[in-house]
Length: 263
Image (tube, rainbow, N blue to C red; front, side):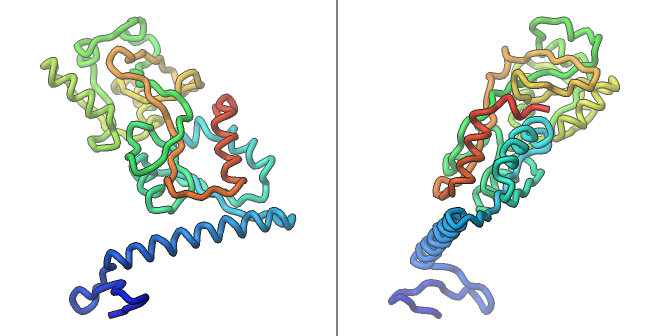
């Protein structure tokens, strides 16, 4: 067993497993923070020397990457062409986990799903809508009811903690005693929209407000604001994250130029 500095840092469990002690966890946490500070300082020194170099890793769900981020990324890279950018298409839950583990600098996720141990900055307002084919009987309704919705085959997100809309829908149906039929489960809005357009079922989506939404599809969007309160997509990061100037600049580009993002 290692005893430095003056206390036990880890202990052996069985023949091959080791476990950090409380002191070991504190030392590891300190070492990680020093390494992060060091990397940040080196990046700033490189910029001062005229040889800027740095990397930026961002994780977000497919729909956010496809519809909402391209404009900002182009504007940002036009100014910071030396940044080595990595984009990761991940589910919302995976985005949050990657931010927590320090695998990415920023994540983009629904604010309500972000745990309190992480920091989140509001980016875009979102609303939950019902997707129906053009000409569908519900398209002309100003305020649809769950009884009306339940008359049609439904395309829903999978069950799971990250799909709050599915959970709330089922709670409402159960409270009202309304029976319904699910014909498809899809975690991807683009995929759901294809089958909705075909008339296979009607689906639900949480989409950025006032941005182009699947315009190339023969779809109509029915507001569900009387059932779902509007929310926000947020920029998620660790609270202990030390940001060099070029990473702070990305957040500024994102938050101050929302109209540049949409496709």
